[in-house]
Image (cartoon, rainbow, N blue to C red; front, side, top):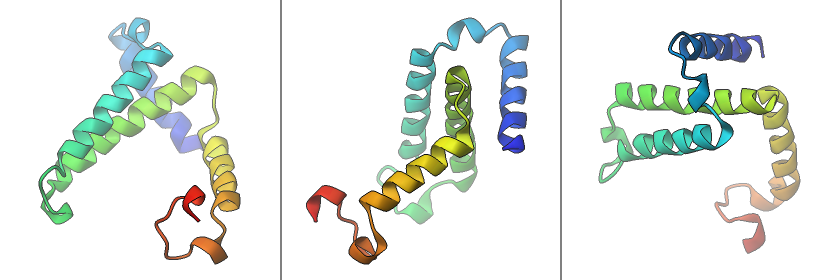
Length: 109
């Protein structure tokens, strides 16, 4: 968790040095996150996965993480805790004995 807090502090420092906090409300952070995810997806459009430029994937993924961490911080979420909670919830929804090797959604079984 210290690493995520460190990264978030670096992102906040970068943001604050440019006076961008005024633009970082939850709505705009969520929109920015969505745009960065779209840019990540675009790297795979009309290609086999192996054809994507791995350096660009790394850069877009960093943008996705950056906006996700900033949004989590805006709400005071503990990233580790909310991810672990979601894993636990999904474990109940997708028990191994029922879903191992299946790509079906929980409501399709």
